[in-house]
Image (cartoon, rainbow, N blue to C red):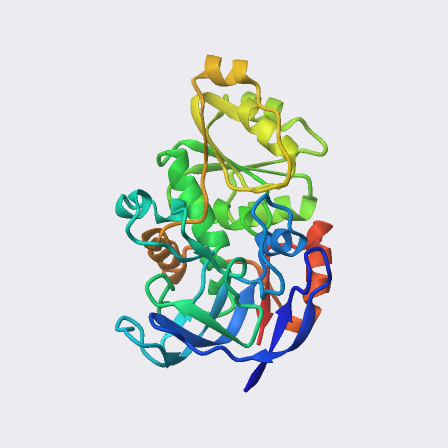
Amino acid sequence: MSMKAAVVPELGAALTVTDVEIPSPGPGQVLVKNVSSGVCHTDLHAVKGDWPVKPTPPFIPGHEGVGRVEKVGEGVTNIKEGDLVGNAWLWSACGHCEFCRTGWETLCESQENGGYSVDGSFGQYMLVNATYAPVLPEGVDPYEVASILCAGVTVYKGLKETEVRPGQWVVISGLGGLGHLAVQYAKAMGMKVVGVDIAADKLELATRRGADLVVNAAEDDPVAFVQKKIGGAHGVLVTAVHPSAFTQAVGMSRRGGTIVFNGLPPGTSEVSIFDVVLGGLTIRGSIVGTRQDMVEAVQFYADGLIRPEITTRPLEEINEIFEEMENGKIDGRVVIKY
């Protein structure tokens, strides 16, 4: 039997929506009939082959899929037919290396990644690893919750890594698919929020979602704004994909602050070593989240504290979606509706 899927024929090429064979679950895997799949900027990087470790075509992108389990592979005991589950960037990890043993499975060097090293959710069906697939609460909106599975958990973990406490200030730099959720998670966690972007509509969205202050970096110097208004932020979370945002993050920090990089633009960014040393700053990267981070991030959503801004589109429009994403024309998150 076959299904419709969006396939990357070669890196940098347009995706082809075509019929492919429905996969069968192996040991420890389940087959999921998809209801939805979020479209992430990482998917665009995957299609273009932007990063040093590249996926191997042909492959099916997507790591924010949501659907019902149709078939259970051998040895699976924690998931049953009919369960609502998702896939994630962390499709699987080895489970026995130093990182897995110490609760840092996201750093496992043997991990597999959804829609990158294994086929993902840009199709009517997908396979997931039963040990790592998030099992979702019944009653959640399958379109909204899709964006929690990568964008949501990524910023939630990133905010935890800033070590900002309730009542302290955090800057969210970049207010798109990740950033508009980061504003909401930060407010739900008791933080004061400054939103930074270059698009008026994204700044307006951040304000609606609870940002205390916003600044348009195309019109004003965000470093001067943040320093003047609040004396620098205790933490900065960079979800933007423009290299200048990473440089600005240092300038927006309060002494002793922590800067967390979430965005993954190709190329490099300049950071002032003098400012980092003199200010006693911490700079760290944060990649998605562990299974426990996922449970917590989904619970914030299930409790009604997070409301993703989504637009549903058919799979056949995937190339147009990527073009809009590349040109910064997407507010919130686009979710494929099957």
